[in-house]
Length: 198
Image (cartoon, rainbow, N blue to C red; front, side, top):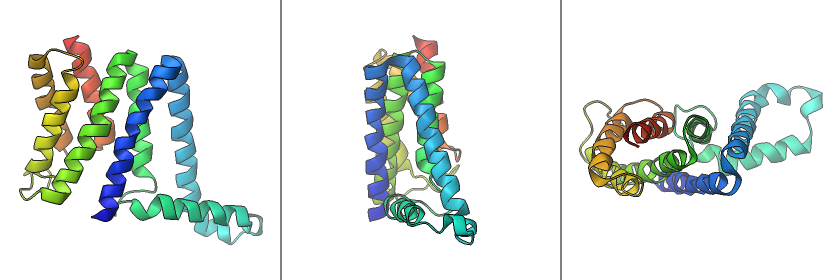
């Protein structure tokens, strides 16, 4: 459980991605998110192929051992079973990249806030207090989804009127319940709904 709390704390810190958009604007944010996804992808591939590389004399360098140790201590130990290396961070920032590309900055900011805050809170509450599994996704609970809906609604009320925020929150919560990659589906769905409502 301690591992999941650390994971979700990092997830919530993803809200700092909003600062990137506010400070640098749409075009520079697109480039920065793309670079970050690329760096994470290279790090994941490095980790995946490290066993093969160890056999090659060129890679018997202390620098590579330092990188691997850092990745293992700070990231790999916190990953869920069944996920590929760095799947959470890669899909999170890919989701940020997609909404910044597709939507105006304000809608991208709202989408990232829902992804960072609502998704993390729902996982924490679901893991700590969840007792009733969803019938469509046994990895999630009604308690977690309820918290997702409430926090999503509160966030969206800053961007659209309460009735539309309520409707959008229901749809986004239903999408978050699905067993898909919610780091991609949640921000995209949020951006689409806000675009339609605004």
